[in-house]
Image (tube, rainbow, N blue to C red; front, side, top):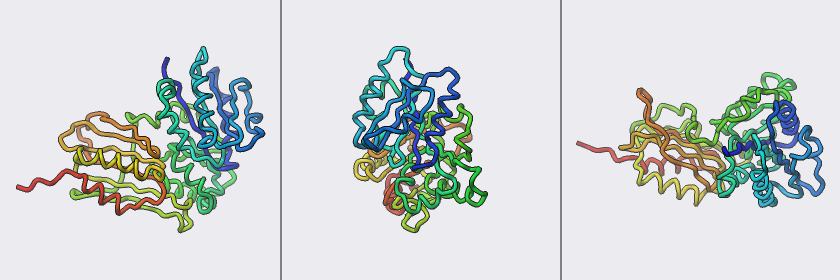
Length: 335
């Protein structure tokens, strides 16, 4: 059987996650989805608000799915993949206070889940009116946005253009790789929500990052400390590009050290890397201390051969990252 795609639905309290989930189930068009709803209390409520999937809704109560009941998540999904008939997808709605990164890690680290499921996408629902304020005072809001490949600015009909532009700007500063959409009650074609393959390295795309320099990297965003009140406390992004190719024997050990030593603070990282003497692109995606990487495809004819790397996390040091990566570049041969 083909691996079952898993969609993680995250977002701060009151953003509209359950409204979106209900719409997805109503418009499933005969497809079969299993839904896992996380509750942060002994009495489940959200599961009772989910319509149209009575026997396929599973509540994980009295703990956040990213920590206390993570073992329950593995148990439930392991049982689901063994069910006869299979599912077209698994939807996981996290509590409004959850960090979705450990959820993503679960599907990358557990052997059974890795074999029978594939992490498809992390979708973050955000309140378009209140997002900038939440980012300035609620660490969870920034952590959720940092993990997302798709951000839905919900309740767009209740926000004016100034609010919407401010929210879009805040998201792009915090997570420059995110796809941001304005929506009302989560209205977006299902084709744009499912089968995104955001965690498929073969489909990895990164935005343009500066112009680069022959002798090093050029930061586009740099580190944005959020204690300035613009973002969630301690979360920032670093985007770098390098024209000169990397030395593979230096870069790979550096990447491994980065996730081992700083993985707790590294919420998300992505990169398309050019190695000296290698005609294939090297791509990687990291979530905390897990890295999925490998050679991707040949650099296309006419394609600019340069490395692009994006890091999102807490207490990032842009200068240190750039300096360390510069030491991983191929040496310049002098005639």
